[in-house]
Length: 372
Image (cartoon, rainbow, N blue to C red):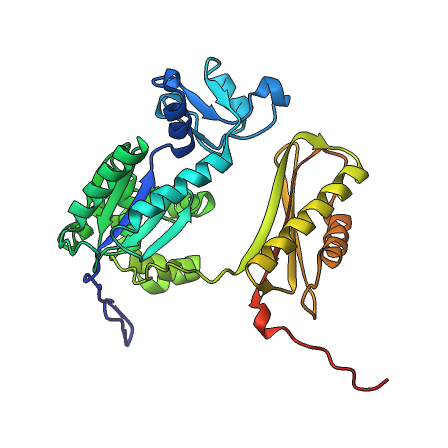
């Protein structure tokens, strides 16, 4: 590409890897159906029933039968009930889901140790070199599907390609229990036809701006220069310029260096008094510090998240000169942030505390007295 006297060479693809993205199908709902076969074929929603929660709460996931009514994750439970009054609402058993997720990863480890979990129900696997020495990544994907079904009676979908981005997009194409394979020679045509909404990481507001610029699918994005995309979308523009060309060299990282540790609680009954808020901030502060100690991390930046009854969400952060040493100190900081952004005019639906900008405890600064 040429702009005036500047010439930009097309970046080159690395097509040497074999990457899988495994995504469990409607995981939480599927586990509940497995545990209670009478639910099979019925619209199952993982959320408290609005009649029990006073219309509060959000959908964690929904069975494919429920999705036919337009129900999806992160939707208010009340809206899901309006769309499908006969849906079966289940609060969710997250300890059970975590237990089954661990068993799924045990199956993955039969094939490779290069596993990067994204959540309880999805992960990347690098099978370029694999334990059974199987040359075909597609065969491995089929075997994983078979193992998960035979051992857990659950289904998953898989995307198979040469990088993480394409594999993740592909895994969503043939749900449930499907496999979509995008080899290097097919990647260009696949990406050209891909709706811009399907480009992983492109949010709602970015999609709106894309449409304003006439970018509706990969082919439109491909026509934009790197300079144009960076000027319009910054760092994301740089990334999208490469992704639409089938380039994503990020490795599958089995151990990710945690950049933050946080805890948040959503309340079935809104918090409406200062005492209730303070109590929850104390609980969250204790849980966050416990998690930090478990991960041998500490940090200086605290983020408070507040969501109100009408779903308005506010965050505020503060960075301190010294590492936060205990839950009492974290609580005081969180309470200060609450005083800045908190309000009891509307009920508090959610509170969250996160400590970010983490460093290993090994590098803790020791303050030495310079004089008495």
